[in-house]
Image (cartoon, rainbow, N blue to C red):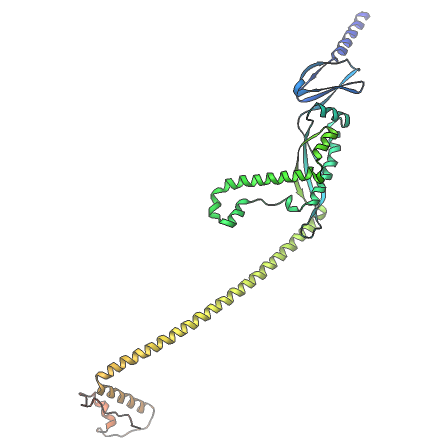
Length: 352
């Protein structure tokens, strides 16, 4: 009985030990076979997927590396931005980014295993290297190269007017996306190729890691400088508001002065026009009056006598005792019935 149990155990152990001679390569991985710790062969799952043989454990061992695209977030990095106006530093900016990487081939997998071995170690090595380059890139370019509005429709409308571009919103939206993509690509090249050194090639040659993409996730100001940034924004807006108010007052003064000048001009023109019209009216009235008086001079003299009589008695309170045949009372008898042959009437106005 004891011999049977021992034999069964030996068979099971032998079966397990013999199964270690086989290993499977998945299409999503690289398999590295080591013999006593020394790398012996690298299997690429993209080309050599399937069942393979090796020496049993502990002679040969298997290490597996993921050949798919891998992504990890970089730690937030703080850097001073560049002010193009003064040529000095501007403000502190915190940037978060992420990296997409992979092991491109079997040769790179060999190099990766010899230098890094694991994805965690790759993250520990690549993160400081990429963050250092990112901080240098941020400090070398103006803020608007990293963050800035993109609106080609508004820019075009300022040149040719909104009615011409309002029907092309979709086209301008696509153009905005292309501009954003070009900006991102430009920033990516500046990030990876700072100082004429291609970081992607360096990492590939040193560690067997291909940097497929590096992207900026977001920007924000650190907590320590947010109050000063907010105060700076408020002071800048207050200065802008003061400038706008000054410009508004200047424009208002100019508009008021121009309006007053135009009012004076219009008033002068109206006054001149009024004087001209009144003079023409008086001349026309005199002409019409002369025509009317020329038709009946006696009646004209009669009216003049009435006016003289009215003027004489209205300007005094004296009591006059006159005969009914007195010439002063003749206008009260009625208008003349006929004119004199010489066309002149009798005037009651005292002659000088």
